[in-house]
Amino acid sequence: MLLSTMTNIHQTFRHTCGEYAYPLEEALEYIARAGFPAADLSLISVCAHGNILETDRWMEFVDNCREALTRTKIIPCQAHAYYAQTRDGVYGTAAFERDQMLTDRTIRVAAMLGVPWVTVHPLYGTCLAGHDENEILEINRVHFCRWGETAARMGVGIAIENMISPPFNDPDNLLRLLTTLGDDQLFGVCLDTGHAHLNAIDLPSLILRLGKRLRTTHIHDNHGRYDEHLPPYLGDIEWEPVMRAMRQSGYDGAFSFEVPQTTRNIPAALHDDVIRYAHTLGEYLLHIE
Image: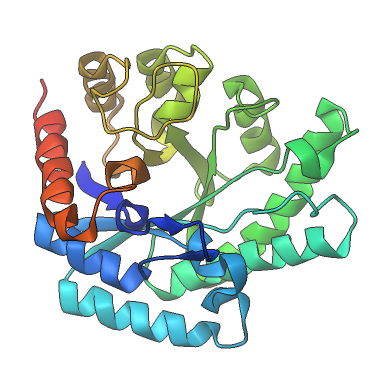
């Protein structure tokens, strides 16, 4: 497995002025200094709140990020596509279509940056309020087919993430969606360990069940009540069985942290030390036998 962290480990949200405090390109510098060989590019914040991917200047970001990846020698092992940041994007509205356009754009951006697999959230919750489970699955099938056309044209795969809430907190529904899409070379699963733990799902069993369909990971911990996005061992997930299941499954992709809380409210002067700790923790986990 390839040790990685999402770039949001150094993208603390500045709530007072509605923007992200640190650009993704700067996060790559911190990640490289900490010793990580790879990064998961969080393209969510780059779209949100009027940031560059939401504008007609979005190719500037691609150029800047490509230069930063070259400079830092970081491998862009996976990326996180945009998903709705507000509650106004209800199915059938212009706001909903805007959100889907930005998801499509970030799939293209990921491909342009050499990412092999991009994680995409399924559609559920507020945007599909009033729809039953079968309708939600069909709406997702249609939209993932569209995104899949973009992905196939651009040469990138789509990993669909397990969520906290129904229906895609249930692995049966996630795998049902994958079966209807019918292309395991183009579509796979992103395993979010924190989301699974919040649903009391046995992680080692799930990992083995996913098998070759597991394509990307969001590794983080919690105490089974809130989506805390803590580093491993700061919640109550038992990590030794998880790591053994990862090895047994034959998974050889990125073992990628999604732990923005690692540096949240920590002064920037300390971020290098904190991110180095995350790297040390990752190396420890990868050497569990």
